[in-house]
Image (cartoon, rainbow, N blue to C red; front, side, top):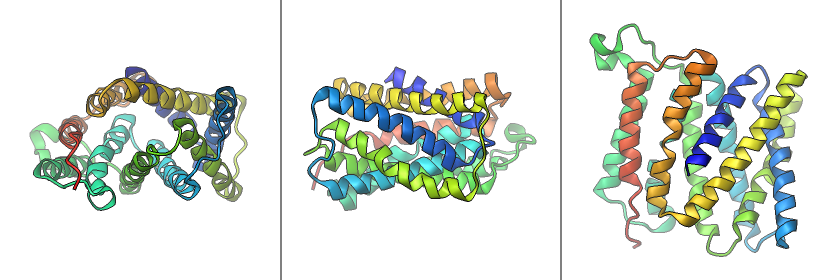
Length: 280
């Protein structure tokens, strides 16, 4: 789980490093690398890539692609730490969505988590709520990238709910395979609208986006197989301080008090929402 958090945080660095390029190009590069690795792994394991519940597999791919587009757009427009904090609302969204979609009971713990998470987002949008002593001259985050980050967390939660449903019948490699399979054709029209020729250095960054994403998914899968889901996801929250560290070292982004307070609130929301509720 620590390795997956490290890989995903470095993926964020790579996405931000190619912020000059359209999001469609970054998604295309990621899809090409991930699809190549997934096909190789499926062939090595002797597993058919098409699965049993193809409609839901395609739906999971669509949700994941939409979430990826939003996450990459948020990373391009927000500081690394802030974008990662917003993305970590997905456990709370997942817990809320599991009630109507999976029949899992909604309890007070989940509702409290939702309140704390949204307080964190409000602080990111308007740090002045902390008061002049703590906020100082800190400005709020730009609205559009912040909305992209929230949409990315929501789509990620929907994708996780679909993965939980697919896990009853599909091999994990098949579920992973459908993500780039759907993302590849969907990223082509976005790329066609505003193509930008990447430099050789940017091509290296794009390759690193795909590699770090795939490494993060593989490490995440192994971690979830060996640890209880709640403990594993709580450990992965180390991605937030890692993102803050890379933001300081690579891009000179200082962690503002509002971002720090929001990170604490979202961490509390994450821990509260991870406890598995009883099924109805």
